[in-house]
Every structure is written in C-alpha cells, then in structure tokens.
Length: 204
Image (tube, rainbow, N blue to C red; front, side, top):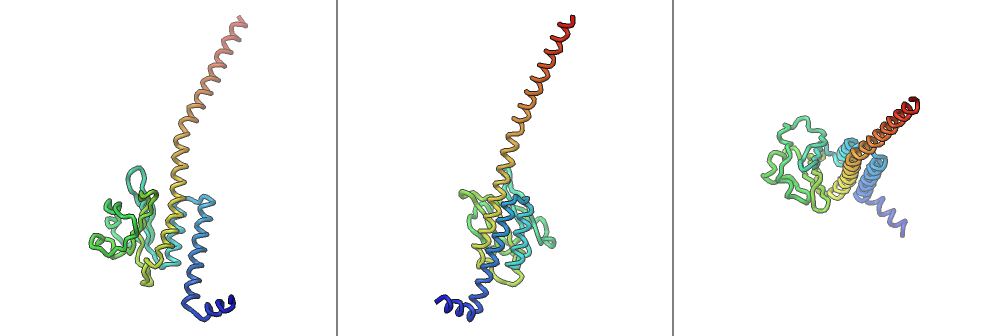
C-alpha cells in the first residue's frame, strides 16, 4: 500500500510539487524558530522573514508596523525604494481589521498598486503587528499561502513581544538595583567615617 502511494506521488507532478513546497515552508519555519531560540535581534528576524517571503513566495516588498507605547511605527521595510514614503504612513483605520485583507478596495487606493495583502497579527484580540506584503513576481495569489504567512508572522510576534517584555522588566528593575547599590555605598562610607572618628579619638 505504501509503495502504491509512493508510485502515485511520483506519477503526480502537481502533488509532488505541492509536497516539496510544504517541505520548504516547514524548513523555513524551523530555521526561523532556531533563530528565535538563540535570541537573534529583532531586526534579524524581520530580515529572515523578508528573505523567506522572497525565496518561497516571490514577494519582494515587505513593511512591518509595530505598536510601541500606544503609537504605531514602521520598524522594518524591504524592497520599497521606489515607493513614496507618504504612501507607507500607518493608517489608524487598519485597527478595525482582525483578519487578512486583500488590498482591492478603494480605501486602499494608495497601497494596492504596490501591495497585495495587509496582515494584522493580534494577541487577545488586540493587534500588535501589521504586515504589508507586496505583489508576488510570479503573479500567484498570496491568499493561497495565508496559513503559512500567519504562522511565520506569529513566530516573529511572540519573539518580539518576549524581547519587549524582557527589556521592560529589566528597565523597571534597574533603578532598584541602583538605589540598593547607593544605600550600600552610603552605609559603607558612613561606617568608614565612624571608624576614622574612633581612631582619631583613641589617638587623642
């Protein structure tokens, strides 16, 4: 039965191509996960994502927006040298989307010439990252790969959020450490001063 299945796979070019494509996606996700596990910098994770999108999906344009302290910023961009920066300004109307949006509506007039997909990545129904993905060079539809794109984006989101929380926790602890160090130094200085006075009194 297994041999029959293998023979059927060999005799079906489209099925074989699909399996190879899935294997490439899994390999790409595994490489990205490894990069996360060794704590690669945030920008490196975005660069890896852009390379994966280009190699596997023929997407050369990628823009990443991330929420920081109640405001949105473009934190990564790739392949957009020919686009007016004003076109890439974050639009607050995007916050109303929770699912991937194919940029065909008139409301995306300024974007749909260059991009095909707007992808919100959320945590507890709260969008934390938005991705703009360009049109594939091979004219395929990105909606075919939406599960893979979302999975990859979620891997990056979790890594970035963990880095942010770690940084926030450390910055909150730093003043306490400094304060404690200051108390130790002051106490040491006070003990030294007292000892000097005692020494002087004994000498007298």
